[in-house]
Structure formats: C-alpha cells, structure tokens
Image (cartoon, rainbow, N blue to C red):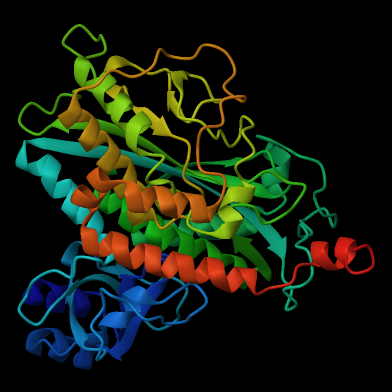
Length: 446
C-alpha cells in the first residue's frame, strides 16, 4: 500500500498531506505534513495521535474514561489508499487521506468510528452479504456571525434579498446561490464524491444532496468528506453552511436519510426481493430488526441535545418506528422502485450524526433482524404522526443505548462505553448554559 500511495502522491505532484480520522462527533482530526515527511512516517509507523482523540467531545474537552488509556498513549495512523483525494480548495497540490487507527501491535482501535462500521460490515461479509447504501444529507445556509448568542438568519442571495418563505423544490430558490453550488459540484468532482441531485428542501435556504448508491464504507467516507467540503465552500462565499439538526426555531430540521439494501455477494441479487420481484422474508426480518433495535441506537443517530429539537413527529422528521410503502410520515419508508432497487429508507438520523455511526447503527439493526427472523408490524398506509415511540431527549436515548445489549455485541462494548461517556459529558455541559428562554420567562416571573 505504501508504494501505491507514494506513486499517487508523485503523480499528483502533492506537496502536503492531510492525515484524517473521524472522531466520535464526525469532526476531522489528524495532522498535516509535508509530503516527504508523510511518506517517511507511514514507512516507519511514526504517524501517531494520542488515543484520547477518540474521547474528545464536540466542545474539545477530554474526560476521564474507563475505556481510554490513562497515560494518553499513542495510536498509529494507517492510511487507506482507496481514500486518497486531492483537496480542491488549496492552491498548492494537497492530498487528504482517511486513516484507520491501530495499536502498536497492529490491532484495530475498536472505538474509532470507522472501525465500528467496519466491525458491522465484517458480520455481513462473513455470510456473503454486502450492504448497499445511499445517504441523503440536508443542510442550511446562514449568514456569518461571530456572536453565538444571535439567532441564525438566512443569507442574501443573488436577488439581494434573504429567503424567508419556504421554497421546497424551488428551482429559482436554488439559483439564488448558484455560484456556491457550482463550486460544491466542482469540488466534489475533484474528490470523486459521487453526488447525484441537489434540491431545495422545506426550510428557507435549506438544501439536500443525494448520493448515488454504493458500498457502505465508501459512502460513509464520502459523507464525512462532503460535510467538510460544503462548510469550506460556503466560507469561500462568505456564508456558513450548517448540518445542525435544528439550527433555527421556526424552520424544519435537517436529516441524513439512509437508504439501505443488502446484496448477495455471490449472485449480486438484492435479498429483499425474490426472483419474481416479490418481497422476501429477509426484507421483513430487516424491517423488524430496525423496529426492535433502532430505539436503542437513537443516540448514534441523534447525538446532541439539539438533535431532539428536530423530532417533531411531523412528515419531515418522523419520531416513530412504523414502516410503510412510500409513506414519509413513518420512520422506516420503503420508496417505490423497481424490484432490483427495493430498499429501506431510515428517516431517523439527523444531519448532525457522524455518518460512520449512523450507517453502522442502521446496519446493526438490520443484521440483528436477519438473525432474529421476527416479523414487523403491518405497513402503515395513513399518517404516522401520532405514533411517537422514540426517545425524546439525549439522556433517555443514552439510557436506552446502555440497556441495548444486542447492539453492544454488534457495535463493540468498548465503543458503546466510550460513546456514552462523551455524550453524557456533553449533555452535562449543556445544562451549565443559561438560555435566553430562561432569562425571558424566569428572570422577573418566578
């Protein structure tokens, strides 16, 4: 692999390399090295980070952990050649390479998010199955502001006016920011990010990008890099792009819908349909697994206090585990498609979720369903807005995750412990903040 990477770096005339890993929050961490130092480091195993990077919270804090090494020992970064890409927004040729984290004995670090997804995929691989994934990511464009106390507002487009009304699927509304989106497409093309369609979502200046379907790890890598790409491109156009689940009080939330099917490795057949195009028992078992286990995995799909502000139960953010054909009010939608494309759309994850962990949670629930061979509820043909069955806040979701022992076996016990440690610490940090609502209604009234 080292030889391949050296050849690729030389071919692209790269001068610097960004060594990326995803932390629990999905934030890119790592190092930037001159190319000759990078090559030397991967040849000698000298490319290292402290292990506690994977226990770092979204606020940048480190906490006591029963999982992480107490002395802050290093882990070694091992590059994945398939993830070598150029960084399109730098003038000097710069590479970005996603790395796996391994211990000094060569064993994978089990609580790294990419390793968690790899662990789940290995279960499918052992029985000759291949998950096929297609994420959809929503985000808002907002004005830049240095004051976090100010509510977010939509930016001014080409017309000179800020979008106020909701413009779902509005063509002219997308064209308001056409130069920005053209640059996003250009940057994605350079990086080989296989995005499909761009559309305007229900919120003011809210957009959605759909990815073409592919292997789960590749799509998780692409989603990880895409979020960084959109944020950076927005900065170049003097606006902010945010993947917060609920950035504005009077606007809808942003989701990361995950479309999933399972293919037989030998026959390349979608196991959700039989030779006649009819749904199979495996299709029903997969839905049953999602219904049974996604509530316990909710914290992986909604990992922040803000995530639960999105859970309104309305069509754009269902808060239930019902399923139905082409029904957007349920958490588990089966889009209308030809038989070969039969898939299940998990509509529960927020755009703020770590792509590796949201996809791992989805697949873990499907895997458990295939093993348990249960039957799902009947498909819902009407509205599911009154069927709120999911955790309503982060604390309840973390309680559910701690009790979900089947998920621990699939995702890894150490990862679940570390994840809950970090997220409980973030929830406690949030409780230390006094909000404008409290000052407005409690200051003089209680």
